[in-house]
Length: 147
Image (cartoon, rainbow, N blue to C red; front, side):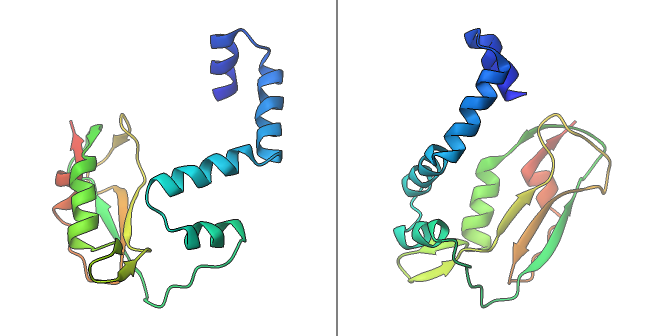
């Protein structure tokens, strides 16, 4: 789909676009850009090196999976990224806390539906992963605008 959009936008043969994309992956341009994105988002160079060297990441805590269910039937009109970010940072205490020198790199939210997805009440639309015990009953309403 992306190659079709690019080919129409720039009037390039779709096969040529696919070839250029494939070459960008092969010569590691895409991976280099990915590393720059990680770095610009504050990911430690040590972590980027582990990814680059294909090293496994260790997780000493058992993570639990908590489903978030749609609070009603309808279409997801928007996803409240601010509320999700606040929940991940404040409730899960996920990420890297430089003040307390703690790392909780594995806790987070995995969204399973997109904006404009049709959902049924009580359908799983996301998961919370945490070593803590999490009550997800109110999260659907806080994270998703469903109409």
